[in-house]
Length: 124
Image 1: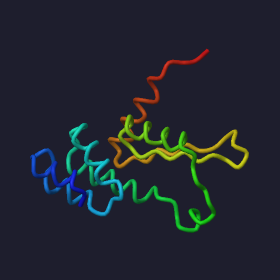
Image 2: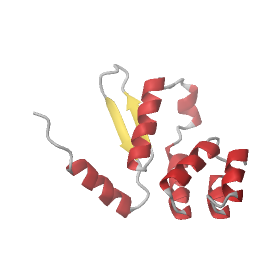
Image 3: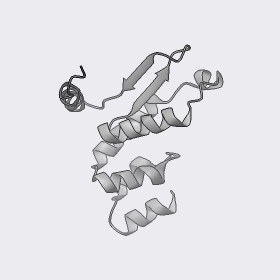
């Protein structure tokens, strides 16, 4: 466990349950900072970790070299942080179209996402 996460637990900012949910994540320190900043519950962290695990590309796909540019990764991170749900952007071969995948962890998350998406102003 990274020292930052241990410090959060020692300082009482994270519980042992939070730390346990983050075990094994290569981004444990980064995620711990988000958990503290957003005040996520242990269950929310567990759902986030489960969703991230299921959103990981397969090894076959990774072997094909589907590396994303820094802008795409940054956009995925920003959207994930704002929506509090894992987001994946997949560009099609031509680069002009693609898929935006938002993974929700519960029906409540889906309801919240629908409310967010339907409140956007129309662009004319």
